[in-house]
Image 1 (tube, rainbow, N blue to C red):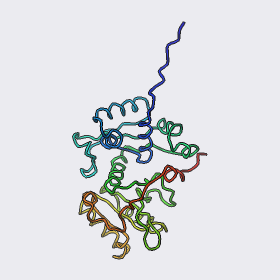
Image 2: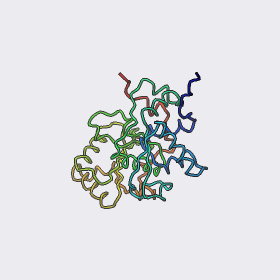
Image 3: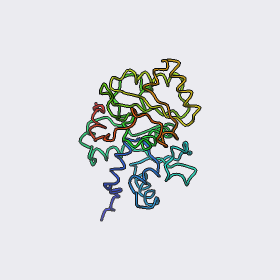
Image 4: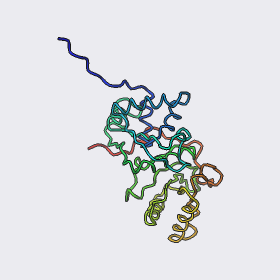
Length: 267
């Protein structure tokens, strides 16, 4: 008797692998953003259908989220009251190890792609601010920094070197729920890093920005603001107020080795 053919699942394409690489770095991304990055000339339904195939075959998770702050929503997501977000599954990570250009770096290293649903709006905000700044980010889960994980920067990027050669800028995103202790803990991480030249705090409103600046000054004095800037998402989007010392370097880029080389080795 002839055996029935087993379904071997979806055949992955080069574009699929690129999406997986993006999601490993960005941790979460919205439909509008993925469409713009990977299907710039196609209708969004084309992206939606392919992502649905990858979800159904276990490579991606799909989460439906209420709209994040307007300044952080990608233009391709504006038509809906909900944002479709995607994250990478363990099966997606396994596919990267076999197929990705970064696979030789990833093999043998411990990598997590999952993200609590409650943390996804914050991660989308981190990604969106990176896009507004026009620079690649090294996100917190790929940073090798000592101390409390809660006080790690949300991401870092590279500025032009300052007079001492420091060029790392720490990026902190506060959607309005960080406590005074959390804000000061984030600043302590910055002050303890010999390679960090400055820190940029980004938040939704002018009122929140004023509170963050007041909190920092009360603890460290006015001089701390020489190395710290607090801006709203809208101000970052407009691009006029960011200090030159915190502007991304025009040559900033991340290679697979830059991004993954310091991930811990699997036991």
